[in-house]
Image (cartoon, each protein chain N blue to C red):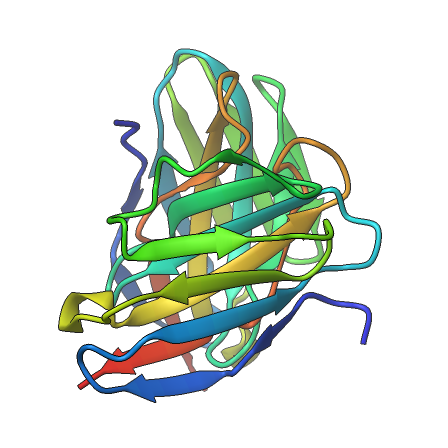
Length: 112
Length: 114
């Protein structure tokens, strides 16, 4: 059984605050790490697909880093906005499977 | 639309009833996945198709769950004799290649068994 854990479980921040979440995953048989944003009543939206140790990816105010040797990834949001409110899911893929193993997500609420 | 489409969006079933959930993947996508998301949890893998072949059904929780993709495009997830513990959001995802990398998700079907 693959263990993918996310913390914190939920987060309330004020508009303009910067924030970050953690995803930990198995450090062996790594293939890829995905980050998704899932807003209520919408489809999960892919943010990043990360495959190389040391990868850093950025999309607007959101960025992510990857450490495959120690098995963690960080997602950063700079200057949070109310529209960033969503559940952020990370998902791990190992070399033996085609499907994703998801963490339970971090629910972010940004107060105006 | 160009995305993954799931229907119905919401389904209420009486315990013991059979249900069928439909997924229309993005045209041309080889891989199709079904996931189940219980309240407060992340999505959990149910089954995977590559074209019409069901290559992995290790996540199906019981023999009441059955999935098919007969022509390699639309897929149906069928749950027989639904139980309360089947209440969840069922997500479908498709990807162009054989791997799940870069998969696109549908909006899900929320199943409530009463």
